[in-house]
Image 1 (cartoon, rainbow, N blue to C red):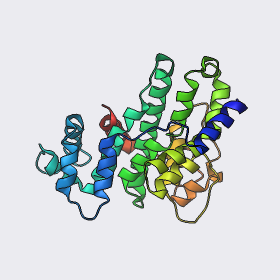
Image 2: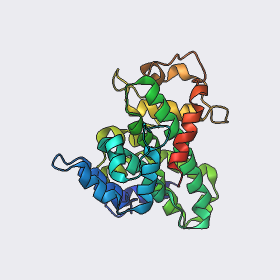
Image 3: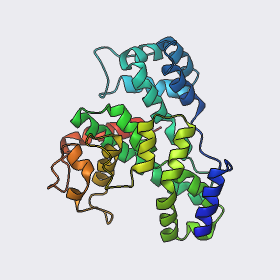
Length: 274
């Protein structure tokens, strides 16, 4: 196990480690939206080159989450309704599943489990952000989706090591040790903003408290713990975790009441499904 960790970190340092790449359509959309000299029409030109993505974006614009008075039937109108900043994050979120695709049967169930867990945490993060009005829900959604992206190079490297894949305890320990530095490197290579890079780098540190104001890492930490309720991994001492107090949640409780938001969580997960 120690040798595995050493080798993968050495490969990362020496730029030999193959990192996941964000689908080109998402990279182009992010680049164009961030360029002040471009327009919504430029963004639309990129999106319409991907028929499946175009259909999904129009469907989202007509969904209960975002719909207006009149139905939308084209990308340009969807952009007008949603706005380019929101579309940038939605496009990234919608194509994210592509990088969680397994290359072999031995990895298939792990990748599916990882993606399903990420979508559930992302949906909860979306709802929490909406409750607190301090964050944009679409940014919290993307933060939830990418927080475990550092696990992908580990699983792909372990694919050729059946003895490691079969050793759950050893693999879990490796993932806990390496996911943060790997995730940070991946998002840096995608040129993501610092607040999202921090999510991959720091979400495992439940005691983190770098500043009084809450950030996206705090949102993801709370969403993760909420998602673990009722499982053997459920964390009991919420009052010891700064993220809860910073987001304004009562630390004496052991569950955040999302009963009224279950429909929204379901709609978000449906939105992310292909």
